[in-house]
Image 1 (cartoon, rainbow, N blue to C red):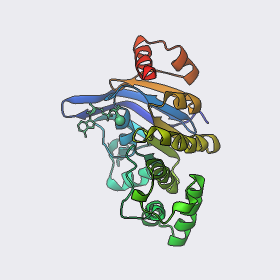
Image 2 (cartoon, helix red, strand yellow):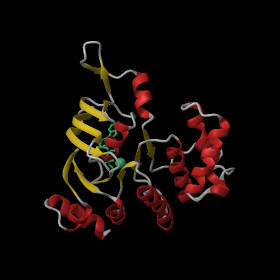
Image 3 (cartoon, helix red, strand yellow):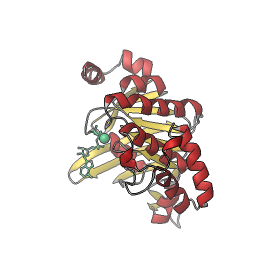
Image 4 (cartoon, rainbow, N blue to C red):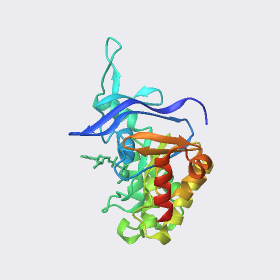
Length: 259
Ligand SMILES: Nc1ncnc2c1ncn2[C@@H]1O[C@H](COP(=O)(O)OP(=O)(O)OP(=O)(O)O)[C@@H](O)[C@H]1O
Ligand SMILES: [Mg+2]
């Protein structure tokens, strides 16, 4: 981990109609840092990830990724102007995302799900993409499932394909949006194991939205408690989970840990 922020939200505002979801959010993640975001439903957790993935635009403030503005670029006079599609496309290659509902392509084999974007977007040869895809399937423990279709896999296996697919684009930053919430309880462990292994063995920057408090505590360098589109409290997991400063954090943790 270095001190340099790889992700920075500077007074970011996001509205959906009359609803202000992010209200001048300030948020930073350092290079190589593993950060978990926890918080009640509707507090803006997914919105933060979707903005980074360029799936949602912003209404105010500046988001920086790797030192460059994400939703803006420098105009001729040096001022920030809204980003072009080309700029967004370039910036997007730094990030990968794993979704709650896997979002695999149902009509493609497991291997093709992983090789499709590297071939189309990064311009890898089919051979190269296949070799890399097979290595990644091995990494997530699915080397023998390459030729199956998503519907022939369990939820936990599908999510591990989702992780391999995100890694295939060689992102510097990996985003997870409740990657285990759609899984049967007995399949949660295998997915958390893969994420834990990535966190331990790679210098990827990881931003994880999760309800798995024990796991967040194990893998995170820092935990952020979101409430109403702001960070209400953040800190090292051992502090935030055992002795939060804010009553609101305490209430939230009590509610989820009782569950
Ligand atoms: N495309 C959209 N159009 C309108 N409102 C939206 C849209 N996306 C999100 N919202 C609203 O923005 C707020 C924040 O949503 P977000 O998905 O970021 O919450 P969350 O913290 O991820 O919640 P959850 O824990 O339920 O996933 C919610 O009130 C949601 O209804
Ligand atoms: Mg969400």
